[in-house]
Length: 298
Length: 227
Image (tube, rainbow over all chains, first blue to last red; front, side, top):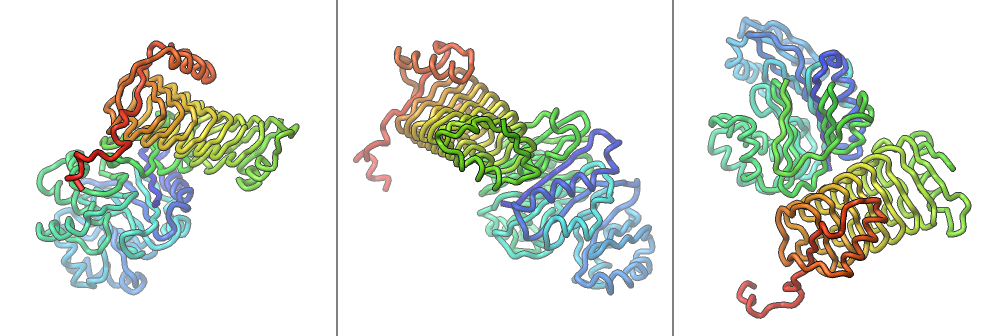
């Protein structure tokens, strides 16, 4: 099971509604997975700035002292926005390489959920409705976003096992399915120096894309080669700074439906996820082909 | 005509009302509004009634149908008319994967395209698709007829038994033990009748027939080394 959704806005006037539309889409997919939920949203960006979304189990304590600590050690912290268990840290791009080190020195248990110029990832254990409410997703605006609700099969129900997974700067992945060669691939990727924190299969899929891109592949090429190297079932939706992509494995038993109008392109595991989108009655609705990489860019 | 608002009254109340209809019911015309992609709409009916669904549905629409004439004014999710026994299910849009799976009788008409595994393990149902079908269609299909006016995807009719497959367009690839067969006069008659029932104006002579090569039916001793 698992339910995934994605929404790419062509019409800028819908941007203030992105969080609400995406949350509503994800809530309709609750039956497909009650364990954890998450949303990646691509919002405003500023040249020369980087954003990190971080998460702490002790947010109240950690996020009180962290801004001062970061300012002291990095000196270029431009914004620190707390949102429940998450916080979005905006800093000067010149110091982004040092961020992870400084954060670990402050408290190694604080996790980085996303890194990029516009990407923010919010994810926690719980139903889509609870998760989208606690992070006030409905109030967020953005250009595009993807979401996931999980029915755990391959690893424990934890925040780190929740999707979306950050695969690189401004890139993220959600997955419906299960990968069967994730153990051997995890060993291989760790030998290549790629950080993989959990026993989760999708994290390995995400790390695989990170590794491919690190070695010079474009995201499209990395997705093409995933069709060869990943064994198992998958429908992937990936987010990038400029848009989003969809790929299904050759067997394509994990459901997927898409809709396009002159205002947006939308993805849902089921048509139910799309029914409340504007003018869906006149949208072009279709099922993406197996083993075919689709991309939409702004 | 009885109109039923699915958003207002819910799925269980719709399906129990439809399933309560008997052979001689006088409530023969039903309309379902606001289906909004819901699953299992109009399943398990066993009465000669008409059900019109105004919009797209989710999984398993019209499953296990007997006698009823169900029309969907939209597209359907996976498993439409699964295990249909008799009656007719018409989809005006597209159908997702395994449309008509394991169907034992009746007619399923898809006016758009059907996705992968259309007619998988069909056991007597007739399926007419006005558009294309996806990969692995008619896998292990046992009997009945699958008629496709467009193209078929990869591995058509893999491990096929005695279902007959008629394709007007291209076949991307044939599955194991599926082969092209000659069109005989009885096949022309069958096509003419089913195309007409499915309101399709394609000509029987435009189709090619595919069926089982029957090489997987019995164990071939020459293959014993493979085990």
